[in-house]
Amino acid sequence: MTDTIAAERAAPEPLLSASVVYGAAPAGGAIASARAFTADFLAAAPSVRLEPVADERVELAQLVVSELVTNAVRHAAGPCRLLLELRQDTLEISVFDGETAAPVPRGHDPRRIGQHGVEIVVAVCESLTVEPAPEGKRVRARLSLLPE
Image (tube, rainbow, N blue to C red; front, side, top):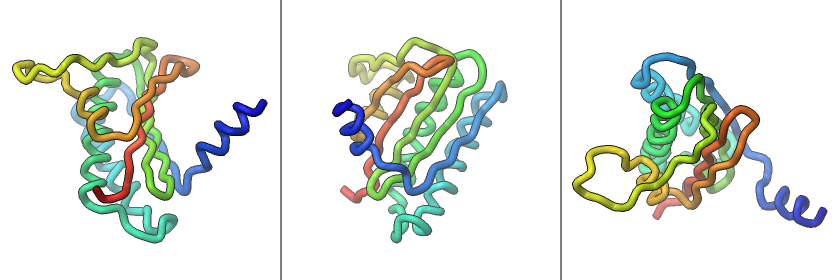
């Protein structure tokens, strides 16, 4: 019981949250739409956070969303869902898809073309976790909104 209480306290309710589902549309359309959805979501941040999110952090959030949605659209059958949860100093980005296998970061290889998405997310985010979900998995990235 103590672990449950501590876990709940560690993750307070978000100040703002929104989600969108991307169906079997062409991958490029879902990715562009997810980037725009993220920018619009963060533009609403001052209404609950008291200050705007810096442009640099919005761009990083869009990059993370692009990578996670790209993985879901390319490697999982069926729709994927993007969930954004704004906390005071962090943005939690979750992508749900129907594939149970976790994305695997590949070793650094500057000669490799593509397949750097998980490496990029790990490099810019505070954390990246993969959790089982009822019909697949949830990939969750936590991005700091504080300036570096």
